[in-house]
Amino acid sequence: MKIEDKSVISIIYTGKLDNGEVFISVTREKPLLVTMGNHDIPPSLEQALLGMATGESKKVRLPPEEGFGPRRKELLHSLSRTSFGDKISPAPGMILSQSITKDGEEHKIPATILEVREDTVLVDYNHPLAGHHLTYDLTVLEIMKGD
Image 1 (cartoon, rainbow, N blue to C red):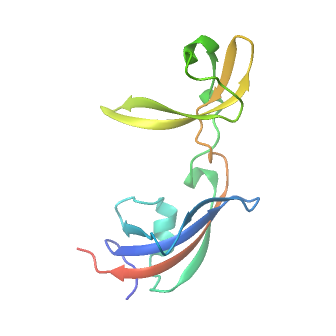
Image 2: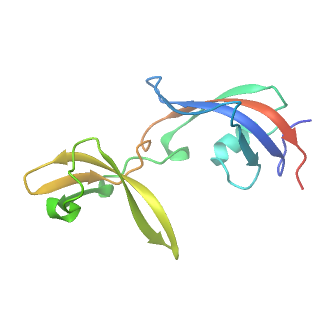
Image 3: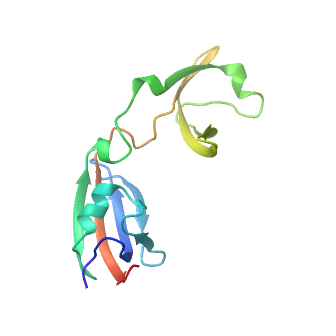
């Protein structure tokens, strides 16, 4: 059986940056279940999986536009140190989670502190993986027939 649109599959994978750093690893102990066509994973990965069989492996490299997008300068913001209150002592490299509401739904987005100055803090709202090429080593564990 080969993977086709609407197939429900079980996969494992490792995601790496160009420098070899692993940013995610999904193992046999907790494989990822994906329904093809439901946008559970980036479209380029879905395309790469189509036609694969159980036990087959493939390496896929995504440009930033197909992963977490390019880095955008307009997502760098300088905030007042007082906006952090007394509970957070901002430091470079710290990743905060910020809640935003979009289309009536609440989403959590990462915000990385780049620089702490006397009165301001430079915060990067780009996803930490934005601007990076991503390489995935995928293996299909199981293919279950879809609807």
